[in-house]
Length: 194
Image (cartoon, rainbow, N blue to C red; front, top):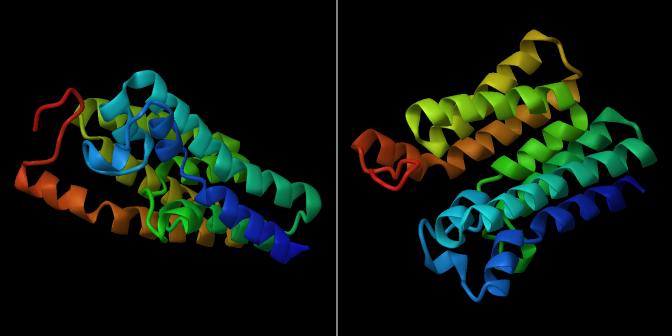
């Protein structure tokens, strides 16, 4: 049963909602903006409503595998593997030739499933950092890192702490191009200008 839950987590995570919503609108989001399938690029290429829809759907595909694992197993290790599978599915989608997004919204969904209070904190912190710096990537990376350190400080269950740590590593690796552009002063800010 646990293998089925983990596989389901990966398959759910692999659903490219950004690409699907773009296709519904007649746009391949991979050919616009940053070329990413995530909510930020969808928002830039298609507008706020489609972008928010992708964020909510990507968040749900992270939360759902965790909730299924909690109901059918309850074992924190299985729950953690299911959450990690969803994030990996988003970042390396089976349906996109093992390419994909950066894992932020899906990771937030996993966080919603394992620690709802941390999800709320992470979202608020992301909004504050992104609002102050006007860099979505800065908000994403710093909020993820802060949540991970809080998991350690608050002595959260080890499987969940390791899960969050691995998710943070993946998110940071996926954001390397953004971080390089920020250092060079060429990263696009919220509002459009660099």
